[in-house]
Length: 192
Image (cartoon, rainbow, N blue to C red):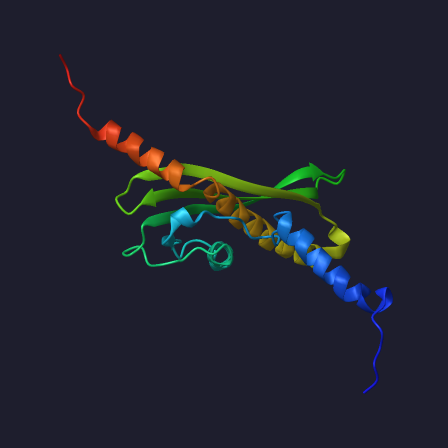
């Protein structure tokens, strides 16, 4: 076995890797697509009916799991995230001189609501939307159909990220404040 003296050249790559790991972990770096969903929302159920696109529902669940949220059925969860009224819309936004569509706007919307197990609203029914514009070319129909399909998938993923971002502010302090406000609203007002 041959002994090799340690020089800056031989330790440069491992040292660079360690320094990068330390810098990345210290700056709050996070993988794209994951969000720091508060642990206070555990366990959480996701109510995503079959009328919604399966890919969208799976994307929401996957992002929650990546964020460290424990998912359970609605019967045993402390919080229920309800997703409903998913709509996909496609409209012409520009017309050519031949009166055919030159550009389309794709728009996806969904309604979300976050309730406690006792049906106390933490996030009232809120509509979220994502949209994208793309040019249409009649001479390249197949490529444009593929582009539209990819954009539809991206819009669904973007909408799933918006759902996650709406959950981020739900810290334990905010949940407690919402529960206190709800119980204060439920008390009968006292008249003199």
